[in-house]
Image (cartoon, rainbow, N blue to C red; front, side, top):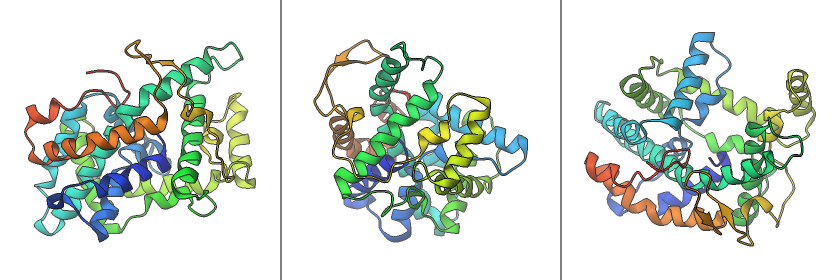
Length: 306
């Protein structure tokens, strides 16, 4: 799945492609862009009780791994149970969750193909799949930010992509806790989402840019128990870059590990093709017809055909 910056850039473009009946601005746009980070903030929970941390990590993994359509439709339906004054924010947040799913599902096979190729190359990375995956995503983040905005994380820090108000965090947490209970059988306090956002921000501020003193201390400690550091792989370089091997800009052939289909698409191809799919999917999601919507849910978050 793409990482935080690439998701944010996708969300900015997706928001512009919504029909007028679904468009929003101000706090609703902020809610959409936060929802567009999907369940990823739950992966970064570390300042709570062991049981709550485990539940957060489990929700992030299960939302990415099963019952994709049911989870998204449950988020949509949860908006209807919010107070009327909060439903605009809730609708925007739920649509953001859908945008996260769409880019994940379309891009994951591309990233997984590179990950497998690197880890199977016999260069000592056989047991570093998670770290290689994160490094590919980080490289794409850095390049996408430079190529689309001509910025580095020095001008646009990654934690800024989690911008929100207390109200947005409360509504988003309410929606996601309902999804957790209804679809995945996980009991999670709505307030925990705000804590996960704080934890995610803390991690990003500590590890970015790559090689900063605080980041070196943290990743050095991580390496005491492993040859590799996932947090180091997640960090973003602050230098501008015109080249990005991970983006496959020369359209070299690659094989989808989930379908065994050979492709030559680049990451920009996948990014913009996903945006073309977005308006129809958003409209079907909003109408709430399960059969219509499920027909558009072609892959899991991990890119596996459904």
